[in-house]
Image (cartoon, rainbow, N blue to C red; front, side, top):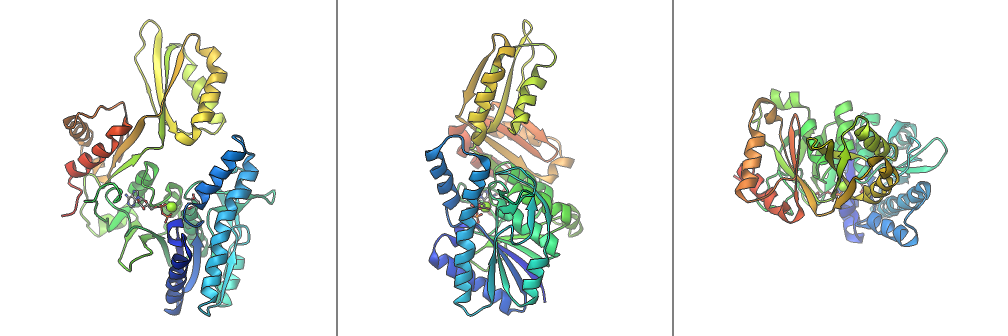
Length: 409
Ligand code: ADP
Ligand code: ASP
Ligand code: MG
């Protein structure tokens, strides 16, 4: 008898028919002799709709109340899904994140799981229940709801799989698995059979929405194998596993495994900053203090004791960043701040880069062949990212996907 954690995203429980399909998939797996814990997200676009509703009330909602609001989305799913399973005459019970024993830190809207107390789930499983758990939410030590950041149900599922020592962690979505790039943008995108944690982490962190980056981090830490697959077919999906396992199976090591993009970026440039020690520490220290995650940073060479610094942040942090820069700008002397929303990030990811120099040059050549201007560049051991104009993004992704020969064979 295996213990399986199955996670269904918002697109899989968007309406009553889909909810019933998910209920039948869960019961079918149970009837094969497995114990099942199913994690669900809020139906369809519920979380976005809730955020929009809050925005119509105030531009500065208290973070605690925001989490109270967002947590309601997943509670709609767990109760309805449990009703659908009950209608199939299966023993089932729904639990909120707090009821499931998921404990988090005091941060709101992107809190981190500190501990899971799985006793209640274990007892319910022992009593032959299918246990349905609300994704994305947890309890802090003040007794309040917190949420785990967008896409956080993936994290709930992986963390539960680790805490319960589950045999399988299946993440069901509306695509067949992890593709070489978003199949909605590039028709030639190919499903990847196996991918390493590190590559998946870089892909998720640079825009591949199919898995939340933090869930992959936790899977790597606890050695949880994730199977990313479709709710709407029975095809094998993508297994996210360790690099050693990939090497042991002598799988083909590609130079580049995937191409990602992120439209959710804005670029700030501070022009004519005084070229003195402490300026960068001042700017990025202030942004870190208010919880803004800065992605790429470039600084130009100083001319006449002045230089420019450009950096990117997520669009969600744009207002916060602007307000903070206004606040600290007296220390910039005559420097000006410019904000550019017309940018996007395109990245190529692959463990093959570690042993093969020249991928960056090849990427730049492919972009230049299409006349695409690169505004910023950043690299890690297995990823190269470029900021380009938003209108060039789709062409850039297609060209890189083709240029690195990632399409269907
Ligand atoms: P869920 O609602 O199940 O959480 P998401 O919308 O979060 O699903 O993630 C699935 C979506 O991720 C797909 O519909 C697809 O458009 C998008 N996506 C982006 N990049 C990739 C990729 N490389 N492989 C697969 N899907 C991707
Ligand atoms: N409902 C949350 C979101 O939309 C969590 C999730 O879907 O994983 O971000
Ligand atoms: Mg998701």
